[in-house]
Image (cartoon, rainbow, N blue to C red; front, side):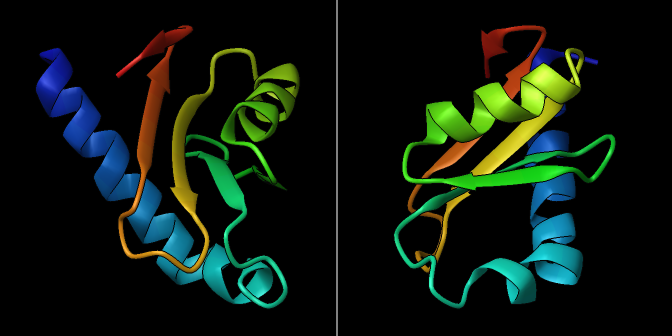
Amino acid sequence: MDSAREADEIVRKGEELYDREIREKVEQGNHGRFVVIDITSGDYEVADEDLAASERVIARHPQALLYGIRIGYPAALRIGFRDGAVE
């Protein structure tokens, strides 16, 4: 799969997980913070900085495929990572 299609798939799966399983758990009291989700395991972290959340997820899942979004903002920031490279 080419990197653009892979990035699109990370975003699609990340948005699906966030909307279906995570949004209701994290939105209250976390407006403006970041949530980063490993789209493979469904594990996630919330932090003030996206890098901090990413590092904590990667510490538990070194091969994680990450999707990140700023809580309470519609698509203000999307982050996709694979094997340590930013997508």
